[in-house]
Image (cartoon, rainbow, N blue to C red; front, side, top):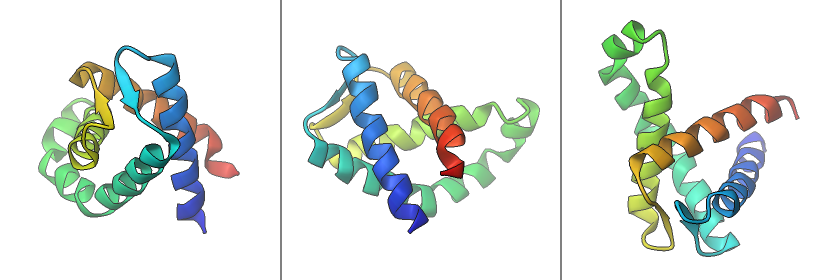
Length: 111
């Protein structure tokens, strides 16, 4: 049940961020945002732990700030999997979206 709530929150965040950054982040519809949220959840469960272990030395050196870059990489992979209906104009925009999503998920984690 907690995963479904997180997927719905991420869907709404995708739509809100795409509305705020219209020139840099594109989501075609609410269905595309829902598909992207599901893909992101699967990638976070399967791929992110491997990337985290591989990047552990740089993550330690940067005191955990490299995690934001990892989240941006996860969003770029999600964009590649979902296709043209969900994409970022640049990697910097993916990092900004990852930062916003991380802050919102921290705030909403006790729902």
